[in-house]
Image (cartoon, rainbow over all chains, first blue to last red; front, side, top):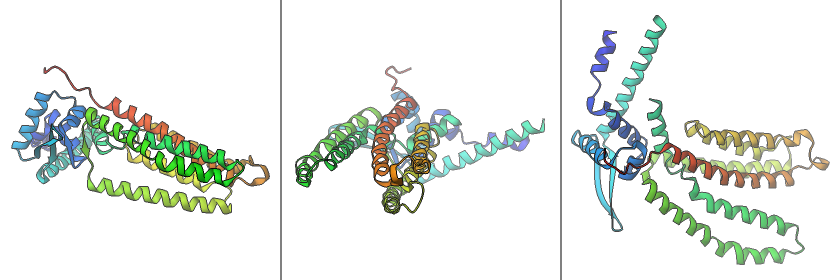
Amino acid sequence: MTEAFEALAGLDKIVHEPARLALLTALSACRSADFLSLQRLTGLTKGNLSTHLSKLEEAGLVEIEKQFIGKKPNTLVRLTPEGRKAIEGHWQALERLHKDAQRWGGDR
Amino acid sequence: MEALKRTQIITANYRALQGLRLLPWSLWLLLIVITDTLNAVGPSSTQFFGYQCLFIIPGIAIPWALSRLIGNYYTRTFGQVERLLRDRLVESLFGIVLMAGMYIAILVDAQQFLPVSLLGLVIAAFLLIQWWTTGRFLSHALLFAALFVGLALLPLFGLFAGGDWFDPLSRWLLLMFIIVGCISGVLNHVALVRNLKAVPQVEL
């Protein structure tokens, strides 16, 4: 049990926050995604999405590229190699915890 | 966790789920197959040549333009997701294998070496793989795969006069493949819309 709690405490808070976990999970399945698609995938407001993306950018987990398509501004987001490693590692840790939790259920 | 896995699958298949993009092409193919069938029962081959020159070649512009318009609608409404290079390669390879598989199946079916239609089974396998690779939530792909298995097995029941099933069945299978393509396009679009969230208009 103690090991599991240590594993839980060891989860990266930047990655584990639900909205950011959803964003990183979505970005892990593609090369890049624009602001609108991330909004449609997560249901976050523009403000919330911007804040979370800024935090992820500060942590070096995503790259943000601002560009123009025609006359319209477009924000493109992609995972950095560190970001990809972080989300993959995070999912592996979650899967391990999930399996452990199932085992405890079986022990009862 | 399930919701996040679903998000991952939707993102990975973002473009494939934009099923309306292919609808103009599917409808155009359907029109060609129907016209071709009608021409095949017509009296002369010059009719066929005429319709090919006047209808098919300039006709390409219509589904192309409609497809672009639909693409613009998707970009405006759902944004853009660029697929992983690995996924693009797998999809291209899958398309080539499907085309080659269908061609070989038609050749084998024409000889009627087998008591079942290989073309039907190839299409069913394609739909089954599509269902599996898109996270097993597009249940219509599974349903259509079962339909094609059923169609492929029809010769076993002796439904075709004189036992010659290739010509009538293959024509029907191709027609059904295009119709299923149209319906799948619409259902994929519905699946995409149902799984995406509305863009919040008010900041909370």
